[in-house]
Length: 130
View 1 (cartoon, rainbow, N blue to C red):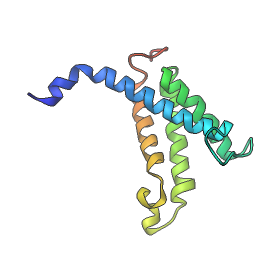
View 2: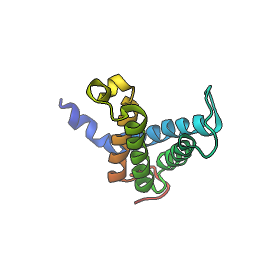
View 3: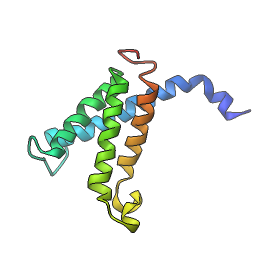
View 4: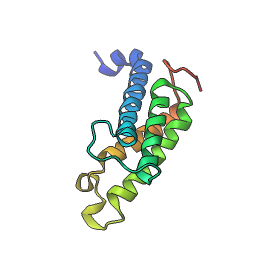
């Protein structure tokens, strides 16, 4: 039996679960920054990291529930691209560019996952289609 043929009928549900889980995880990172939940460091209100936290919280929740999914995911993707370049890569030459060395794997994964979600939209189990 071909595994892809077996799993194909569940493609829409798997995508919806991916969108929901990625959105909730992303929103939790935002809650950590904005409210200091389970974090030792609370950035000052209005700082760049705090604003990034607000974007993470709001966009993550919007992605999870499927409201304005493409817009929220595109903004989240760009936020993670900025996070990788500015806070992880820092324009270092050599191994400093590599996500495994600069601890930027999560930013890269979020960036491209949200770019995919922005292209695909909310899908099933969304409060707002399109």
